[in-house]
Image 1 (cartoon, helix red, strand yellow):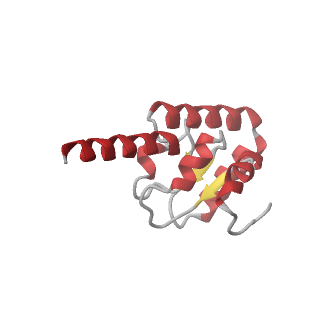
Image 2 (cartoon, one colour; image 1 turned 90 degrees about the vertical axis):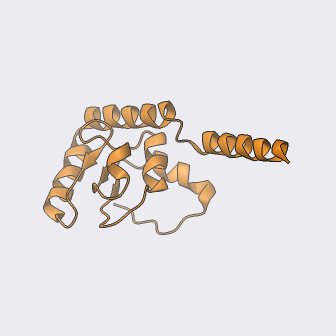
Length: 124
């Protein structure tokens, strides 16, 4: 197991693609970009159903939800994914499909902001 600490933004896809699982056992979140980035890299996620997380992670399909403050449930979910390549692959692919279908990529957000900005400029 590697706890890499903060990494430069340009390295994030490399680390996420090298990871077998991303675990984010938060007690509070909005919609963590880290989860979307992992899903976009086909890295399965083990997360807690807090904030906006349940809107993007479907338990057993695009990732695994573990109760906040339940280390045994977290350990079990991570162990299950680490021991089963087929499940990791299926969840990883399903997560990436979800991110692409819902247009939750940096590129899609950038295009939406650029379009909004152009509309605002054309009104003036």
